[in-house]
Length: 386
Ligand SMILES: *Cc1c(COP(=O)(O)O)cnc(C)c1O
Image 1: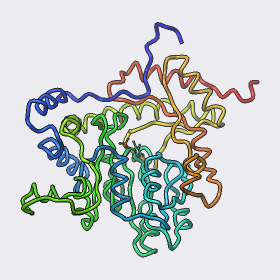
Image 2: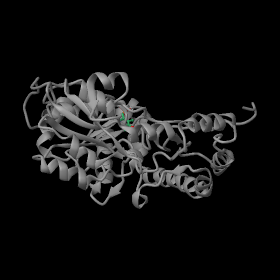
Image 3: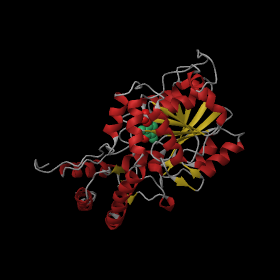
Image 4: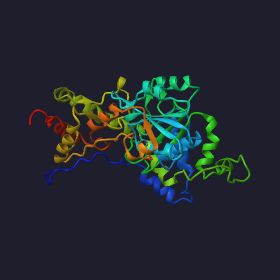
């Protein structure tokens, strides 16, 4: 890469206009630990975006997934259904309880779990179905819930780390299953450095979730005046973020619509300006059903696995950081130890090996986007040319 070319990073964390001001407010107050005014403000904004649900801020999306596993009581002898093509946190949150993971293949049109294969993976040991809305493109929740209901109402966990604020025909993502999980890692559309939220849609879990999040104590009830003293009442951990994180999150949520609009503008340019190139080279652009997604990521699928490294390297030479994504969990070291697949998950494998994600972040200029589009359009598969 020529030294004078500015590198376009794959992702750059967004800085909301009022973040510094809000951080100063926390540091100047006597309340930097969790569950203060910014936790309340950010939780209320999330509830508005999600159109309800009980929202508990957590220290990460991973911790929200762990809470869901504990609340559903997974343990030895249980099975949980999970797509193979997802982030490892969703798997490790199951493995830590002693339950086994049953990995299921994806629908290559979306990268989401294939609902027909969910039905096939259900057994008498199935304790939950954990799905992930890849890029915020909705999983077919009607089909997943139909299977869950046909087997006595198996709880469904929605890992919605990518899809905050997306409305699907089955409701707001993260509000459809028993639990929704949000992540505010700094690579996500809205971030707090690190952070997450557990969205509770089945109120029976709320009391226990509050206790679990407060180190196993009923401190939340005490703070509301519901009990005189607080004490240790159940298993728990320290899952609540500090007010510093909550303040950063609150500043971002205050401009959520602007963030989403900026991301969608970039996504739309990629989709429009790469379409003819994709058709020429036999690549497939991300194209979710009904055009519904969160503009969290933009991917394309190159024709052959070898093209993936080739395209990424060719963009890198022009100072553009593009990247692959999840490596299928069923064939990973831990995946083999903690789970199994009913058969080789060929779609997941192919999707993973052909997928390239392009830079997408708030603050990318039109010139940045022009450069990415031009560089991708220049690339041709090497196959057949020697
Ligand atoms: C980021 C992410 C997580 C984990 O969230 P953390 O906040 O980083 O713990 C889980 N699932 C998916 C799909 C993610 O993208």
